[in-house]
Length: 213
Image (tube, rainbow, N blue to C red; front, top):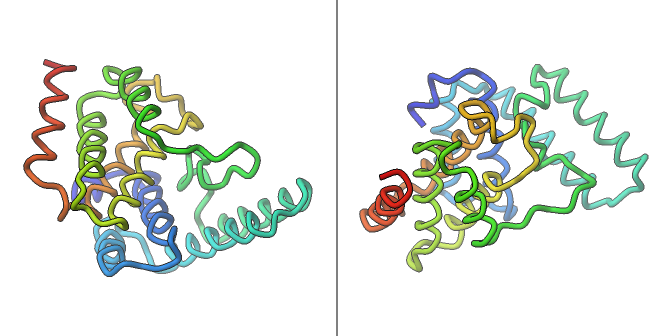
C-alpha cells in the first residue's frame, strides 16, 4: 500500500473504490476491514468527500440491481448515478476501469480455480513477475484452511477482478493493461496481510520459479 501511495490518482482512487466495494459485500464491516480502509485512505491520500461519493455511488448501483428495473429505467438510473459521481469530482473511468461493478447487462463473472489458472497461464509473461506473484500469493492464501471467511472473501473479490475479461485497456498491452489489476491485488494483500504466512509465500515462489526461472 505504501508503494501505491506514490501512484497516479486514477490508480489510487481505483484501489480505494475496490476496497470499499469488497468491504461492504457482506453488508457488515469486519474490524480488520474498517482498519484497512482507514489506513488506505491516509496512505492513498483520498479525501472523506471522495470516499463519501464512492459509497453513495456503490449504494446507488446496489439499489439499481435489487430493483431490477427494465432496461430503460436501469440506464436512466445508472446515468444519473454516474452524473452525481462526476459532479463530485470523480469520473467513473477513474475508479472502475474494468466496469466489473457497474455493468448491468453482462452476466456476473464468477471466480473459479479453472478461470484463475487459465488467466495466469495465458498472460503470465505479458503481465509480468509482480502481477503474477501477487495473484499467486492471494490464491494460496485462500487455499489455507486457517484463513477466515471474511479474508477469503477479500481474496476472491480481488482474483475475480483479476480474471475479469472486461478491460477498459486490454490486458495484452504489457505495462498498461495490468496496472489496475496490480493495484487491486496489492490492496487485497494489504487487507489480509496478517494471514499471509511463510508457507504461502514459498508456494508462490516455487510456482514463479516454474514459470520464470
